[in-house]
Amino acid sequence: QKTLYLNDIAVKEIKKYIKKYDLKRSDYLFASRKNNKPLTRQGVYHFLKKDIQALFGDEIGIVATHTMRKTFGYQYYMQTHDIVMLQKLFNHSSPQITLRYIGIEKDEQRIAMKSFNPLERKK
Image 1: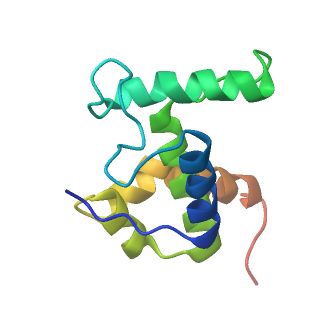
Image 2 (image 1 turned 30 degrees about the vertical axis):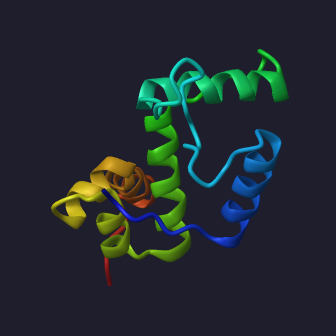
């Protein structure tokens, strides 16, 4: 079990979701309609896909939950530069794994090569 801390915006959105679906304190946020058991990761993906398509239509492609997790990590890092906290949130064994996971290594390489000029000499 992992404790998840949410900011005020996330709490507000979850409260709206709870109200919309008339959930009780003992209910799961994402429960199967068949047996009121928690949904699997894949089940949540299909649930979100349906809601996103209902809100935005088919023209907005659905993003996999794994991609959303990586996007969250990238945005969190770009705002805070706190790789140690992000590593803990993702339960990774090292900051290097987290940086690679969110694609920072590739961005840093791209930026380094973009600004590199082999003809420029230091004075």
